[in-house]
Length: 555
Image 1 (cartoon, rainbow, N blue to C red):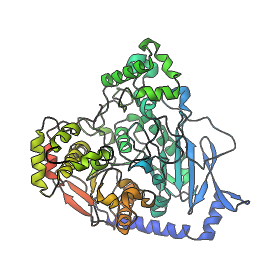
Image 2: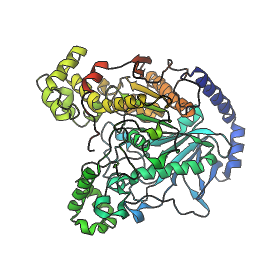
Image 3: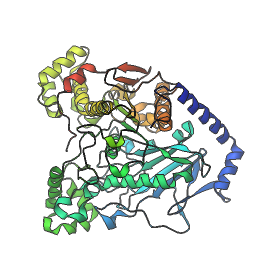
């Protein structure tokens, strides 16, 4: 399925560079740009600016131009879901005239965002919520020009519970200018609105309820298939990528028959899904929500009209929402007991950060930065739910032997990261590598670069990769800083993602040759101040935790 020959990729990367250079030269001629944009849209004579116009299947939209990139925001790809709560989405009704698309759409219903933490910059712009939330955003260097640009479709993190793509870190201008790609970012239903499984309590009418958030993403990808040529994109060269919960959504789509053929590469960072919720577990959560609302199961129809705020509050009683193996939309676990054959022909890239838990745990439990050897065992017991029956004292001893320079808190963050956050990535990569000969390649990477911010306490923590991938470090400098080293990492990682979108192969001239992953070498790109390929990284922790069966939390 890869468009580049073999594993290798120096030639592919050079083709990318030449193509990008030539088109960039064309875009760089100011008069030609203004002329072409004027032909593609209309000219606002009052403020003397180009207003690009695009025609979609449901109507015309107007956007704006930023740094020679056409930007369209808040484009509806689905109808208001309030009239179809817990049901599969449908396309929006066509409109007449030109619809202004210059600002982000509303977020899916969710609890108020926390903007105070180290990841507060991810909460973004336009934090109003609504069930009319099925919108996407497009950045492109061309309109109706037959450009056949690769399309990079991003799904946001926040688990399946919260956040949106309205944050500045997801702005696509710099990716478009770096690699002449089309960038699309997507909002969709979350928490109970997207994943409340009611099929066993409410019957056929609610058959899709446990996965409508995923079906929203399928509808968004269908919109891309049907409309992206208008934006200079190639509907046959679509990369889906996501960080944290967004990566998990990508992994789930890989096992969904409705998504087959709608994407052609997958890249996930710090987000994996090995198992989805079982129907019986998801039904228990649905009962908890009904109990919190005071609704008996035989009155389940009342859920359709419960005020949005009340349903948000009641959903907290369930604790977790996510995709459900319902035998319909999702017929199997995404990566259990093996990698899905449905997407075996799709190249995949899987990345994690070396110190995920420093942010995931440390940002909300600052006391974990002050652990002693005496308090470490209890802390591990509290947070190490993915270590199974392993003796915690033995785990500590292993890490002290491997890393004699580590303090107690260092051992805590390394062990929790490796068992909780890195382990599912290893499962996904190993199971992809075990697929029959002829399957598409999988590329593995880990971000090792320690962020300099806050005296280096976060190191390569959760979220550090996001501004590097989007080449937007200046809007997320609370984690990366704005130094030359951070920009060099952003150059490497964003170019690797762009190359992967082009060819299904992430090799570029900026990094050493990066082989596909196999179970013999386990080659992994280590992104750092000096990036390099390492074989079988963190070998001993991998072997330590591999006997522990892995299931995603809450499933």
